[in-house]
Amino acid sequence: MPSSTCTFCSESFKTYQELVEHREEAKHFDKLYLCEVCNTRFSKQNGVENHFRDNHLPVSGKGKDDEKLNRMWDKGTYFTKSEKPEPKKEPNSDGTKRQADDNNVQKPPVKKVKKFDPTKPSTSKAGKIICCEEGVEYKYSATNIKCSGKKECRVRPGGSYMFADDTVYCMRCFGVEKRKKKDNILGDINNWRQLENVVETFEALKECGDCGGLWHESCSMTLATTTFICHRCVTGYSIPKIEIRHSCPLSQFMTERLNKLCGKPVTRNTGIAVVNFTSRRTVDLVADRPNHLKEQFRNTYGNTTNYTQRMIYVIQRTFKADCIFFSMICHEYENHAGTKYCLIDTLDSVPYFTTTATVSRGAAHHEIMLSYFDFMRRVGYEKAHLWANAPVQGDNMIFTCHPMAQKYLSQVELEGYYEKMLAKGEKSGIFKKWRNFGGFKEDVESNLRKKKDYKGIQPIHIPIFEGSQWEYFNQKYEPEPEDKENSEAANFMRKFTRNIPDNLTNTFWMDLKKRDKPMDPELLEGRRNSHEDLGDKMSFLELCVENNWEFSTLRRAQFATMGIIDVINRFTVVQD
Ligand SMILES: [Zn+2]
Ligand SMILES: [Zn+2]
Ligand SMILES: [Zn+2]
Ligand SMILES: [Zn+2]
Ligand SMILES: [Zn+2]
Image (cartoon, rainbow, N blue to C red; front, top):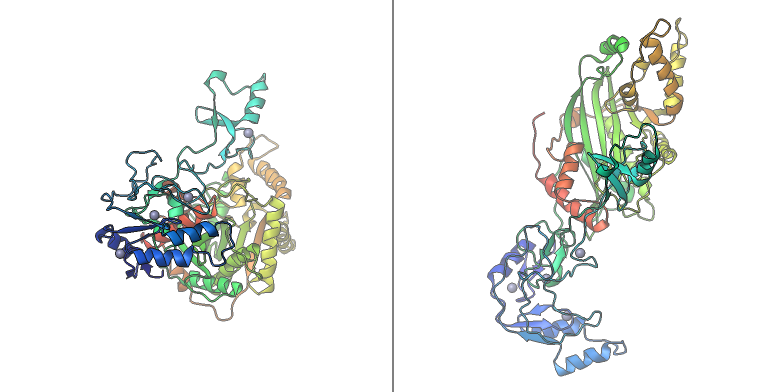
């Protein structure tokens, strides 16, 4: 960040922290000149004189308030001179809510005089929210609550619901259950309470150590838990931007590709930064198979399979502030029944990517996925997979609290979104071939047709991954009681075959194009970026919830990003 200048003595400092320390030590309050219009303070009279002339004195003299301002200048009433103030109190740093009428709030070190402000009728700032339009009680956002009624039913933020014994029903589903004469599962109706889906916690406030004004934590854009000097009290203030300390060949590759797409030179304040963190997982891909298939699957997959869970975060940097806008979780099986397989397991975005004339939001998202697959093929990965599984509007996949207005893609739209990405990838030589499950099934069956006992596609022909669509089918499968005509194998095959028509278009199967000169696989395998908070979906979610980081508004997302970058830099190595 640029140097910060003290508004009292005009001394410059390299860092904001140094300025804060200087403010705490220096005795600037012997003389105090306060600008009547904007409340900026100066230690010398010529300071406020220069300030008023440069910032407020009308140039044309024709504006609405110009006459008033000119008169103030002529009469010398454009500033107030105050007495030595009371000693400073520690700003509110414990994250608790502080009421505007709280007696502890520091009073401003100025005499009560009639103030003038051309925009707002200004009174003193102390104890008042001065950062934005939101008040002291600025609530955090609620998110969808699952309703116990229909599968896709949610209680949306702000909605009412009925609650008893850890069970939630939306008002509509509750009404349906209540009207049921038979099999009414609500029990004693008096046990149910009506609640609202709102969060009652207010955003923490920070008190400026200088002017006493209150700032929402996210408006303050500072992670410091001690002294906070607000942006209005520091000349030439800009939001401190933390350098991202991260080095990984994959991240670097993706970063370069994205910046090339955006056509911007990469500087601290422009461009895109990609980071990724991993955790290792060992799974048994056979355990959930029905008994009659276990041996066959065991022969293919063995007792356990290892894979790397990789969380990729994409951050856009602008002059104002950094903001995360995309995240995806990839699974990398370095030996999946003899094949190197990678897949996108989960993907989430918040609509804060600043588009350019040539790069739309969708194009940026596609390039993130394509640059990932491109790197994977370069280090020798052979196949890739993804499941287009449209989330319910408002559900959180990776980011906590999306903006209410963000429209989620429908299942059909989501499939189209991936198809477009895959077509681009084929054109640019990343995929040798891609197809949905319908195409995959045809390929398998055309290979099998030559064989004598051809029976069409079988469960063993579909690669199985943790959390995949076919894994989901297997977990849902419940064996029926066997009888003479229907063996378990026959029952299973009937359900398996019946399940196929519903799932012809929602999974994608890609062959990655082989490179003539592959890169060293160690660039990937040797670089597992373990991180206790950022390498795993659940721990990332917990991190955000613990810190009240949410993505419901741009400002809150920028603040969350600042916190995430801080955590990125606290790189914690966890042994695999
Ligand atoms: Zn100073
Ligand atoms: Zn001023
Ligand atoms: Zn605010
Ligand atoms: Zn419901
Ligand atoms: Zn201030």
